[in-house]
Picture (tube, rainbow, N blue to C red):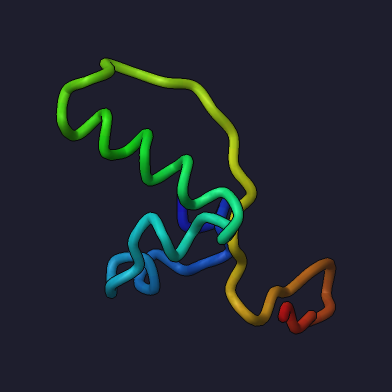
Length: 67
């Protein structure tokens, strides 16, 4: 999972949570689905969301700053 989001495993283990991985515009819906799952209101749900990337990504031998 770390690789999918552009982080190292250590970076994810050291304090990243769901909000750090989901784009701001998609966070309210993701947060609601998480709440429903945690409270047992739904057993499962399929959805998609835009992901956040760390500030610097190595893309095909280049480094790109994301703002």
